[in-house]
Amino acid sequence: MRLISLYCVLATIASICMITNGYKILGVFPTMAKSHYIVGSSLMKGLAEKGHEITMISPFPLSKPMKNWRDIPTPGILEKTKALMDNIINLRSQGVIEALVDLFNMGLMLTNLTLQEPSVQNFLRSKEKFDVVVMEIFVNEADIGFGAVFDAPIVGVSTFGSNMWVNDMVGSPAPLSYVPNPFIPLTDRMSLLERLGNIGVSVAERLYNDFVYLPKQKELYEKMIPGDNKPCFYELRKNISMVLLNSHFSVGHPKPYVTNMVEVGGMHINRKTKPLPADIKKFLDEAKDGAIYFSMGSNLKSKLLPVEKREAILKTFAGLKQRVLWKFEDKELPGKPNNVLISDWFPQDDILSHPNVKLFITHGGLLSSMETIYHGVPIIGIPMFGDQFLNMARAERAGFGITVDYEQLSQKTLGDAIREILSNNKYALQIKEMSRRYKDQPMLPLETAIYWVEYVARHKGADHIKSASQALSFIQYHNLDAFGIILLAFYLVYRLIMGMLRKVFGLCFGRTKTEEKKVKVTNKKKKN
Ligand SMILES: *[C@@H]1O[C@H](CO)[C@@H](O)[C@H](O)[C@H]1NC(C)=O
Image (cartoon, rainbow, N blue to C red; front, top):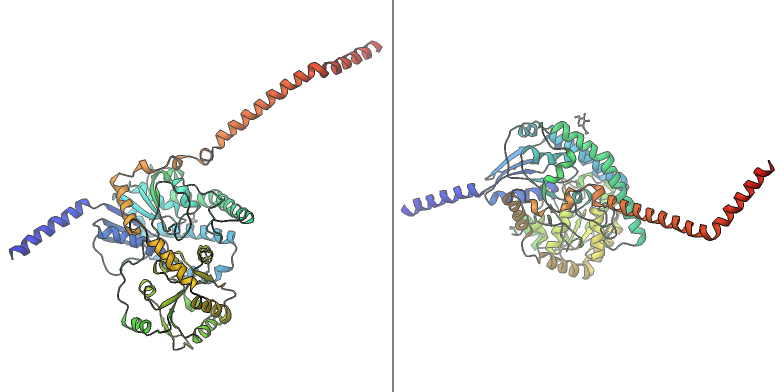
């Protein structure tokens, strides 16, 4: 009895200490794509477990309540973007520029919808204070105003890795000679032609961003973010203390980052494998010829696949010795062969860690690519949009994956790719090596991310880790003013030299000519 009451006292003291040590942290993860939420919520849950008090704005409120967690749900976004998400399969035939413009427009719509939610507007007027705002940076610049409203520094999370608008936030360099634009399937080793393409797309992106897209975000910021003395929209980025990137050099490629830009790729990956549900476990355990896991991610519903593509996939699977788990969202799959198990949800991490799983057929999204590398399972990618093409280009170049073009997807192309990966050992060996490199890190990515969020709170915004480039304008950053002066100086020196030369030459030849002229003129005058 004594012990129990002592324990209670200790526990109470501990929990009080937890509360006093905990920070008030606001999470803003507004994107309707579940994969983005998965990255953000893994960090926010990690912070909640460490005793910080979390408030989370997202379209996905927790189904099971959690300690230290309060949701500000934005369900309207899911309703209003449902048609768009169902149409994702038709987006794939777009060109790069079209895809970029669509992404910018989607971002504007998403930001607009999030800020229109009554729950968000009420919250913005609540006069609460926070120690840090952790927010996704994904075509939603107006949301950076949350930092101003709640008087808190911002830790940005890019679910997408680094790209132009994330680099802009902290002034991180990205030389176009070896950092490919994430919207084109290039790697860091580019030919001259590829570099030209990289420059072309990046310049187009820059122009559209600066002259069309950002002014609209500015409009949203001014209209929807309350506050009388709020900072000017283009000054907001000074409030960003840190950007965490959902990428890792062992999975992507090495490139320069400023000090307050840190890679935490794969922080969402389950480090502790949970036991599989009984039916899946039995299905995989008994797969003596191995098993294949097929999932096109959370955005693309397999049931939206056109019938002829679905038939081609089914026929391919029916001809295999291997067993197949297919993430398929309908109850019924007509003509389903016996070696195929369907479900609308699979514990992806736990499945990929099963030793009998020899191949993952995926859309090549960043999260799936990271999970598959972590677990060391080679992939066949059917990329559909966004960075999936780039991820797959990298997987092919690194030698752990094969791309099957969606237009070309048939019983033959898919079957050939599956046979190649399952019969040729090199893919599995390569991805196991990459898995080893990825896991070789001083701290787990989630621990690293939590460390930096706490660091920013502890140092009240940690201004000392921001590089000076964050406060420079475009002209200053590129030294255009300095180069202008240098050019002007060159021009003046050139004029000076030319002037002197003229004088020198004038002494030798010039005078005679002018004198001749003068003589002629005086002669003429005389005649007149
Ligand atoms: C935001 O949405 C409203 C309608 O709900 C629309 O009138 C307005 O133009 C939108 N703003 C932007 C910048 O897209």
